Image 1 (cartoon, rainbow, N blue to C red):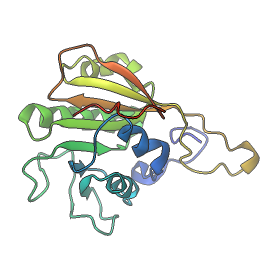
Image 2 (image 1 turned 90 degrees about the vertical axis):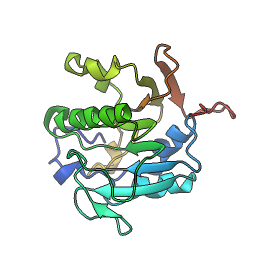
Image 3 (image 1 turned 30 degrees about the vertical axis):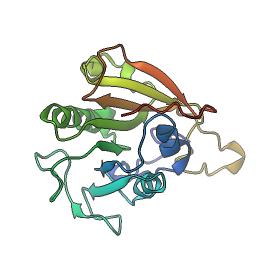
Image 4 (image 1 turned 90 degrees about the horizontal axis):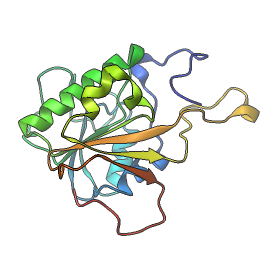
Length: 204
């Protein structure tokens, strides 16, 4: 099922646990995560944190409320604060809460771009609906010189089970949207995951 479908009550703070595949594995198919100092800034119960650690990332986890047992601190990402003891990170990655009409996700993208500009991080990867970039009011994010790539997940995510198991069919397509300080000033690229090709990771 899609997490933004209107037939179901919305989960508080959009707390939808992120399954490891095709999510983090899809990102790792194109982005080198091993050994990268990674800030997961909307960690919830820690599902994405654990998946990032599985592929070798060194994860610093924060969230607006304490949920993940090993979460370093409670931090509202939309404030001007950054995590205590984290002066810089290689990568920021999360499945952001959308909020009404996607406004919270938009604010998070804007904050990420600010941190990129300030040099706090080198790379941002956000898991969003595959058509998130189609809204005209969001074009500023995808016309940014930092916008690098879109990794379309060709396997749909089951966010929560349909009450009718005979009708459990995910309806929502998702993609990773990626921004980087080291963009080669070329047009953004479209990638797909899963991929059967090895050695095609971007050296970011």
